[in-house]
Image (cartoon, rainbow, N blue to C red; front, side):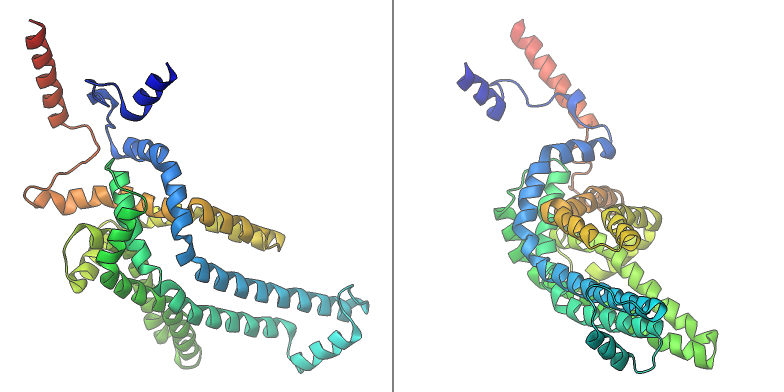
Length: 345
């Protein structure tokens, strides 16, 4: 009995279709939740497999955040000593003397500002190699999650590996440009900000222009990796189409980006309110378990619909609305009913 039940569970009943027309999702919202429920365990397994590619970036961010908070605690204890004359448990007169030597007459707030700038600059520099190596992995994830998001088969490991090998060159170009975005924003913000303070607010225009272009690029990444794995296109065409789609669907793309950043936003708010690194630890666990693959799955569900509307509908022979109920499903069901009636007669 149990053997028959197991066979039915894994393979379905012979002579009976897996789904009826009424079982198919009627819209992309239903398709997203149905596929997420079906592929949740696969996303977790794949995330654990590819997590190593993001480990250097997580380490760099964690290191500099921890470094900054250590200095904040030291300065806070030093200010407490100046105000009350009492030493904190972890401080000695030697550490007070060393702190006074480091400050050298500088205001503690200004000192923390300098430490913050050093941490941001160091993190931006280390982000270049850390983000660069994630490009091919993003392409592999884009292929697998694209198929899963439209209810098509894909092996979690072998298809991911094949997509990575086939698209590593273009994906490295995209991740290479992306890796320069943090240092470009930081450098231009400081450079044009200083010019705006000394020579006039006119220099705020290029400052805002660089930030705006960087934001548009980050939004276009939602489309670029799916375009890499779905279409044969040159790198310049890839970049152009990714940016154009991001601008054409600007409100929706911003919304998708913000949705995927909710866990990080919650962790940052908790970090600022509690001054504890526990929030970052919980955030790291989320990304270890499912975070990277879930984010790419959300992007795939969104970009599948955008590609059908703006690209696939204009390409001859390309099927659109995969995984959704369509008129073709109605025709197939009518044919099956007519065949069954004919056989019964």
